Image (cartoon, rainbow over all chains, first blue to last red):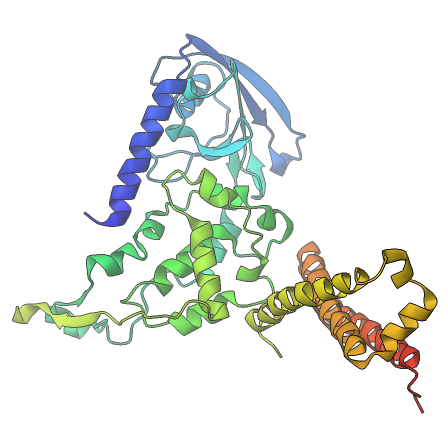
Length: 280
Length: 116
């Protein structure tokens, strides 16, 4: 088991313990949901719904109950219901969270306020536009670039692989847990001011591939983030890492990448060895 | 054209160096009673002391570079367009050079050297 996995398991246990201690049991809650159809030019308003809840009810469950039983027109984006797809990000009681990963019993007060994520263009009710967010992610070329890799389809039978040690994997593993839910982007104070700033998610991914020993484009990745609206606009508020539901620490990735750009950290990255598996 | 990482390196280094020279400058106010140190004759004496004049010039240059780059960063975040970026860069560099030139002139004149 790698160090990162151990750390994440420890955090999960800590979160479960804290939740058990702070658990508030109630039979119903009031959902206060921001409603607006921006395309129709509607002004925003709040609708409230009284929802019966149980100990394990999540905010997403409560919202879906309201949508099914009270108002079919509530706009909400969701899919996996298990914090894997990152679709149901929203502001719950003012904090960016995943609705499927937030239990009603861990929230204080009898009213739960649900609002769309900040820093994203608002479309309808709890749905926001992720185009710009994904464009920043794509700009970072979030894939392994290596000229030695056998990408030629005619050579596909070669069955070669890059070998990495567990220590090599540990350097980037936590950043690869990112589910692109946009909570860090929503919590970032720099993104709120500067729309050309790539945001913590994209910069975290830049570090994830920079630190990967299979990747051969380290210099290009540093050049990509080294511009006027790039990595140096981060104020290091740290809110991105606080809200991440997967335990990723984008603020750490940003600081490590900055260290490399400023020459404080020397890149001792050893290129992963390409080995032909068919000979093994 | 300097890369942003090079500009930020200069920004951090000028900040750290400014802390040091300003600390020396403040300590120099304490070698005599504070109010006496700000009297006209004593101030002029400071300018006539060449090492101290060099210290004042270095404070001027370091603070101007650090401060105007800080202002550039704040202004860059306010709007996102090529025109604004260019405008902010030109204005802050011009203002920085203006402040350094005017301050240097003051130091030279107070030092008693002729500007020709």
